[in-house]
Picture 1 (cartoon, rainbow, N blue to C red):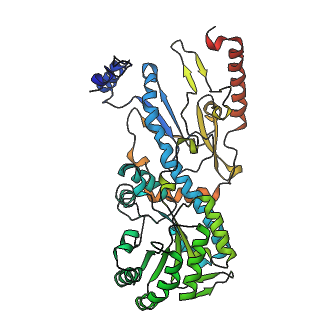
Picture 2 (cartoon, rainbow, N blue to C red):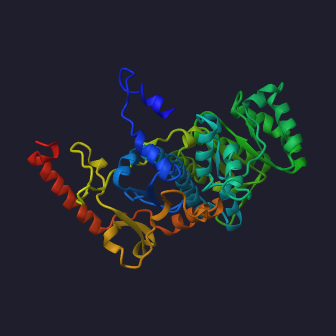
Picture 3 (cartoon, rainbow, N blue to C red):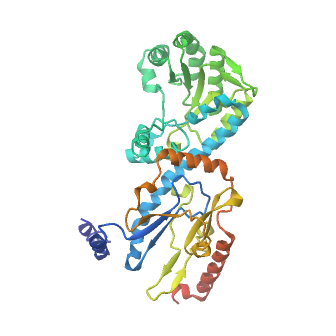
Length: 441
């Protein structure tokens, strides 16, 4: 099939260059596995800009095949970016928890950001990958594909995610009135935690006219109501919900001086970003409420509104050894694109004790004899290595938590020696540009 495809893939539906002989060779000699070495950091590692996350090495004639792997392996940008977005959101919420939530309420932090992004994904596979990345920082998700995948494929059957019964607009509007919709929901799920969206018609009137009417039924059932606005100004919608719930169900003032609504809270899931989180939570505190009384959800903003450029992830050639044995370390330095400058050479990554163990990139030759652990481990050596090298989901999640807490917000990710070497290689390559030899003239 590959041969037939490339026979017409070139311009004008003519034959496209395709190294069929190399593929046939490693199929025959290496059981069909790409004959390359891949070194990578452990999954869930917290890294900084310019930290090498993985390194690919091929030898001899197979070196040209690395470009076939580049596109596929670079797709690691997606779960890495979603995981970072989710973790940064958690960091914002955690800051407000420290200020306004008592110790016995911190367990609620695990569900303060809910994944609403399933319906916005391009396919089920994307929802699984992005949704699992979110679950590295939170337990809450409605992306059931990711929850199932993480539990049964990545965590040996141990659960990693939760959700609650919740209405959507089609449910609310299917009833003759919002009052009837809420009463039916309370009857079915009111003994536990449940959510009702309340802006199908008029959010403010629903809070002032419907909520007081159904309150007795909710109290009779004894459960916990989550009020969800889904339109309007984010800050105003959250505060309206909190004040209405406080008026109907009451609140208690915790030891930090903030009100915790009794048996109810608000979840804001429309247009949430790390930036809007800060504005909403600041307003919640300003109104005297604890961050414990408000949750959040992200949909397209979590799983869709990201791309490879969000964190500028790329794979670059950094070193080549020619057939005559000459090795040349290489870097990219576009004249009009300084942000795309890359690092030259072969790399190793070590934990820096002076920065809380944060990873720092070095030239591989520099510390090979120092007896330190290179965090770039061999995970593929001409084929799969020991399957036990891959951690279960719970271990990866704990690594994210531990390193995020331990590492500084900003760190020196590239060693001084590698930066100096980069300058040296840059000067050498710049000279070849100025002399025209880089262009073969």
